[in-house]
Amino acid sequence: MCTEFGDICRAVWNTALDQRRQYVDRYTRGRQGPFCGYHLQAGQLAEAKAEETWLKAAPSHVLQQTLQDLDRACHQKGTFNVRWRAKYRWRPSFRFPAGNLIVVEKLNRKWSRAKLPKLGWVRLRSSRPLGGTIRSATVSRKGGHWFISFLVEDGLFTPEHHPGTPVGVDRGVAVAATLSTGAFHDRPFATPGEKSRYLRLQRKLARQKKGSANRAKMVKAMGRITTRAVDRRTDFCGRLTRTLTIRHNVVVLEGLRTTDMTTSAKGTLEAPGKKVRQKSGLNRAILDKGWHRLELALRNAARKTGTRVVLVDPAYTSQTCHRCKVVDAHSRKSQAEFACISCAHTDHADVNAAKNILYAAGHAVSVGPPLRDHGEACAVGAGDFGVTRSVKQEPAPSRGQAHRPALSLVGIPRL
Image: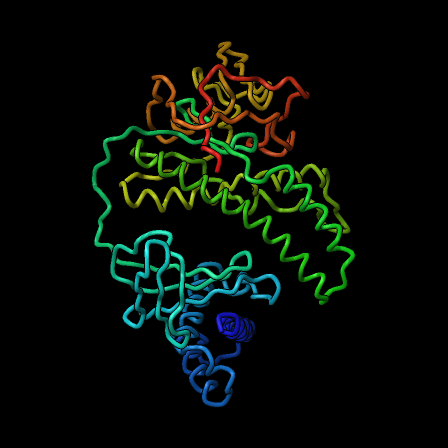
């Protein structure tokens, strides 16, 4: 039934998006007509349910919530920038917005059950107590399993005062996050065995016939590997942001546009791109570290502690000396070594960049000892990719010549 609900929501999304695009196309050509918004489409949905029996299988408020999500996406991104929901490239999900129709009962320490409209009683494993009044419930599929998340009203408010200190965070490819205090936070999200197995499955997938059962098995096997990596990345971001928001009242990040930074360099037939392989490797490294996921998790955790998240201009933060403020690309000797050619100041390159990020927000940089956390130390990578792509993509040193800083390396404990 959940799969059926997801397919119906996908059909409603695609149909409503096609109507909106047709309306925008007619409007640009000067043809007048009724505005194609949520209220018009909600009325048409009610008429379609009276004629099409397959639409009646899903609850009405679930389909209306799909139209509201589409309306919000079109206002934020633009109608022609909203993507279609393809059958094999979309993770099924739908939301029950009526919290008064949802009942949750606890069975024992690990298991509970929830009563959802038209689904009835659904047994689920409780990951944490609800701790509030249920407002809505979202059912989604991930890695071959179904999950349900509850939106609750806990009655808590964001604190107005935070006794912590400001900190700058430099997001990188070799190390996921480097703090201005000198702490390094990183962990591997996929083991070498999982990477090699994923490559083997990719080769098998290329030999499978589209639409066959064997191809579906390969896709599921690949999905299980990527799901584990995503879960580790989510856990890492949650642990790190929890630590940052508890200790610091202001967290300064670079205003990075990850979508633009990970655009392919293939170009067109008339103007083919250069260094396409190097750029694709850099794109994979950026996406693997989860820069955008870290920012989202930080904003979510900051609501509970009152921490302010500040974005600054990322230009030349990696090439500027924190002590004398001289900008020179030659001061960045390697991915991990920074030696100013003006004042001879030396520091770890990522720590120097984090201090510049904090200084750009108008905060003084702490000169105290670096923070020390419990957990396994992480190793600094050999270097970033992309030699001359941007100010965030510095050259990598030769193999075996990566600078090992004399600072404390802090890592998130492995699972």
